Length: 354
Image 1 (cartoon, rainbow, N blue to C red):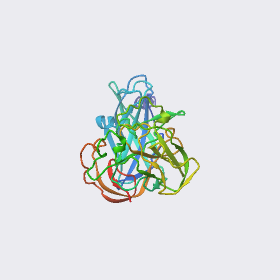
Image 2 (cartoon, one colour; image 1 turned 60 degrees about the horizontal axis):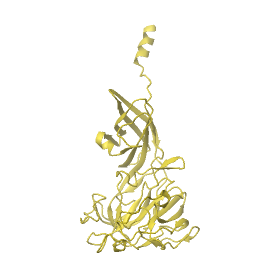
Image 3 (tube, rainbow, N blue to C red; image 1 turned 180 degrees about the horizontal axis):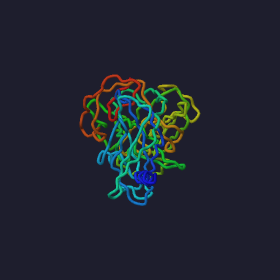
Image 4 (spheres, one colour; image 1 turned 180 degrees about the vertical axis):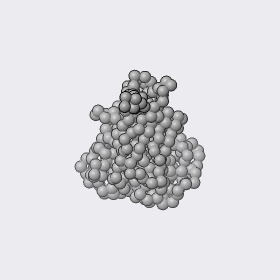
């Protein structure tokens, strides 16, 4: 008996503090280019008193990212490339799946010097609500749907800690830029915002809704190269309109032309109604565009971005990179072109609205 107890004790795995892993917002599946996608983050904090290196994330039966592939999806809060004691990393998941699982199971592998460890996280349930279905925020086209799920400091990876919580308000944001049939963004002097094809375009209500907020007092620089200077966070969105879509969802239209906003808080709008004009106000140094996203709170930054889909749109092309539009390159033929319904446009797709 005494020998059996000794053997049992010798085979027990010693308890060692390691990582705290949190998923602040479980994913709501959204369809992109015909496939369901899961979009969420893992916040990983080092509770050891030594440096840790994350070497692998396995989403059981769905994906496994190691080393360089994992590093592409990870940001260290405060910089660096390792988890020092007490520091945090965020892993950004943007994953296409063939079928939506009921739950997600994760394993994270790490090293601490010569020591290797694995942390298994409790299963995470998939959220069941469907993304809100919207009408187009613009007319005609071509429009390029600019975003990059993995770009550092892009919409998807920009975290704002306001009001005591870290959030990603623009998790599903798209910057819409107008192109012509020759794939240019501007005619003539592209340094002038008035030369851009999209500047002054009608911006449309995506649903019957109530105006939750609106702003129309921020000037625009006449030139793209005009120095914006230091900008307060509350002014980064420029002139904007927020629509209350119901069920805790708010549509945000940002960087509108000053003097163009036609609605104010409390107004009721109809789907397709002109609510303002596309501009270049606020933090919009890349050129005139419409920033559009949907979030769970009536706040530009103190909110979580939630998925949305468009009722219908036509895909006529696609770019490989967010940097390609405006470079002189024409768009490529799309992988899944033609009319699309109830989908979030794919990254850098070229689209025509009815």
